[in-house]
Length: 158
Picture (spheres, rainbow, N blue to C red):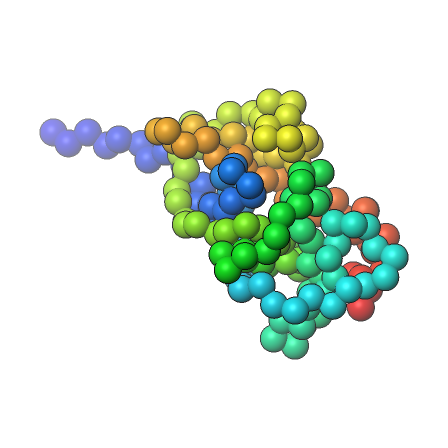
């Protein structure tokens, strides 16, 4: 007799780096991963908004995640990437130090976030996943891209 083991729900995430920490964002919220390109500055925007890019004919606002999280900003390198994420109608590029891989995380491996992880407030986090020797910080894009805050940006009305 064959036992039917119930399949555990998994979350597919794109893993990226900020400084020495690994973060994840759900694949379903990611449209593409792009190499860093010229960013046009937009005046009178918060420091974390680096400007806009023309991505295949669409003007897309770009946010530096290090700056958004209040982390020390670093130099952009060959491995710096822009992760294009979508939240409802809002499409935004997130500058990250590197985009590593795509992995499946069992729901049971995801725990609620502590108050602060790697200098990032829990507000921006969905949870923390413990995978073998890795600790993966999962972002809550609803909070990272706080739409009320974003609506105040002229950049999104372009």
